[in-house]
Amino acid sequence: MTQSTVNPAEYDQQLDAKVGELSHRLAGALPCVKLPTIERFESPKSHYRMRAEFKIWHAGDICYHAMYQAGEYKRPYRVDDFPVANQLINRLMMQLMGKVNGNELLKKKLFQAEYLTSLTGEAVVTLIYHKQLNEQWHREASKLSSALGASIIGRSRKQKTVIGQDFVEETLKVNGVPFHYQQVETGFTQPNAKVCEKMLGWAQDASKPLSGDLLELYCGNGNFTIPLSKEFNRVLATEISKTSVNSALYNLEKNTIDNVTIVRMSSEEFSEAMDGVRPFRRLKDIDLASYNFSTIFVDPPRSGLDAHTLDIVKGFENIIYISCNPETLIDNLKSITETHTVERFAVFDQFPYTHHLECGAILKRKK
Image 1 (cartoon, one colour):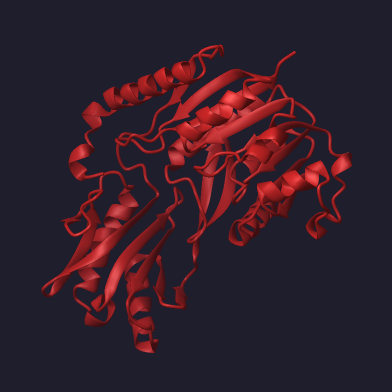
Image 2 (tube, rainbow, N blue to C red):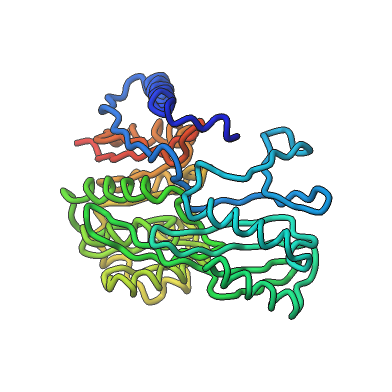
């Protein structure tokens, strides 16, 4: 994405085209499936990203933020302002370059800068170097942290130095109710907070008619887990990333949620446990048989659901499927719609001015 492709005046037209193309692909891939009208959730037209990362390009005595066009990795584009990122990131970008270019110690061998921000106004700036970071760097970076009003993380080979904290505290409003999240620098978070709020609201709204217990695969930091826990008796959630599990546990406590159990294991491993293929020590204190699972929630990686997990998913009465890749979602739906009907389908424009669309589907087992 270049700045020339970001034109708010063309936003509605571009979103129409993306939704129209997806609708056409769905109809072509699922010709015998009755599909509901696609619900669409728009993004702010500018300043919507809460995260951004840039190369730092050195030219003579100065350096600046840079990005590459796809396929043009030897031709950097200078970026002095970034309209897709929020106002806080744009301010930090300008201030950072002013400070770094006036400080040889901070500038030397700096090759990447990453920004993580929140709607609450917190920020973490990560500076990545091709050199070891010593005490002198730490003193200068501490001054930089105070000047920017942001935490600073310095990274180099096998080294991480934190000045402040390595996370931001975020508050998202879901159907008018605030939920609080710790978002760690290295953990996955949704980049478009306002669209994330709409995704959470949609999933929670779709859960209200349901009952019983919820199984969630790929729960991350508890982004969906926390608001959905309000709609079910109990929730059992799985996640493989240790960083995400720790954040999820922190977030559950921060939101005083006591009906959720999180297990650190992959969806493939949990599928084997559900099938009784082999026992897992991580499940020794969990009585799977005591759960009354009516619904499964999945938010898989871009590769979609593997064949074994797909079979497990099809055994549930209700399925809530959030997808970051329409291609693998469509492929999975070819199998799931053999046993389930598509009750609702939505698109969430997480990445305006790109071809990408986040999707959501609510499926119910056929009578």
